[in-house]
Length: 345
Image (cartoon, rainbow, N blue to C red; front, side, top):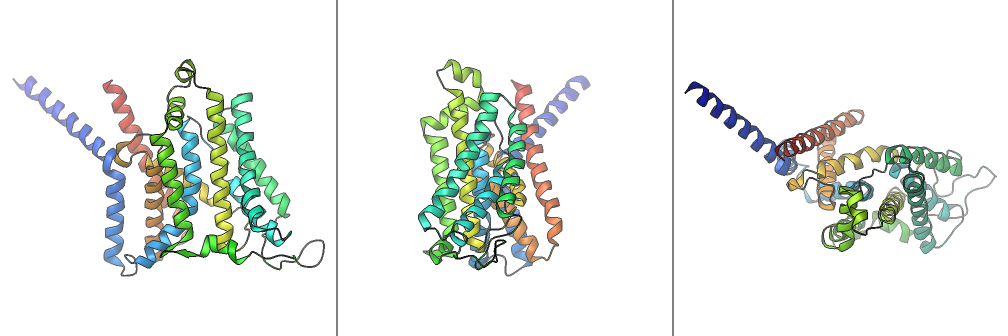
C-alpha cells in the first residue's frame, strides 16, 4: 500500500513539474512582460505613459530588424553572428554617401541594402559551398566586415561638415527627408515604429502563411528530408542569409537617420540584444521555434526592462547583466521543456 502511495506521489510530483515547465514555456515571456510593466508602473509615474511607450517602441525598432534577420537564419538551422558588423557598415556607408559624396536619397537607401545582400551572399558561400559551420563562418565574416567599415571610415564617425583627412570639409549633409525616416512622426507614431511593424507583420506572414515559409522551417527541421522532398536546401539557406543581411542593412540605415550621423561600431552592442530577443521569442505562446511575433515580443521585453531600469537610474554598465540574465532564463526554460518533450516521445 505504501509503495503504491509513494508511486502515486512521485507521479503527481512529476506531473506538477511538467505542468509548471509547460506553463512557463508557453506563458512565461508574456507573464514576465506583464510583471515588468506592472512593477515599473507602480514605482514611477513617468513609465506608463504614451510618450514613454512610443520611445520604447522607437528604441527597439532597430534591434527588432536585426533580430528578424537572425530569426530567418535560425529557421533554416543556421545562425548569423555578422548582423552587428553588417549594420555598422551600412550605417557609415549611408552617412558617407550623403556627407562625403552628396548623393541623392534613392541611392543612399539602395546602396547600403546591396551591402547586406553581398554580406549575406558571402556568408552563404562559406556555409553552403565551402561547408564551414554557420557559427564559425559568420564569426569570421563579422570580423572581416568590422575591419572593412573601420578601414572605409579610417576609424572616424561621419557627420555633417566634418573635416576630411584630405583637407577641407565634407561637401554634403544628411537631408531632412533622410532624417525623417529615423526622427519623423506618422499618425502619432515614430516612423521607425511603422517600419518595424510592417517588417514584423511581413515576416510573420511569410514564415507562417506561405509555402516558402514552410520550406524554410522544413529545411531547418531536417535538411536531408527536405532534400528528398525536392527542396533545394542550398538555395533556401542562401536566401535566408541574404534576407538576414538586408535586415541588418535596414537597421543600419534606420540608425543613421535616427542619430543623424554614421557611428562606427554602431551595431556591435545591439547584436547581443537581437540574439536575446530571438531566443526569448521561442517561448512566446509555446511556439518552440524561431518566429517573427515571438522575436518582436522578445525585443519588447528587453526594451521595456531596460527603459524601466533607466528610469530607476541603474548604471548603464550593468545593463549587460540584465540582458544576459534574460537570455539565460529564456534558454533554460526552452531547453528544459525541449528535453522533457523529447523524453516523453
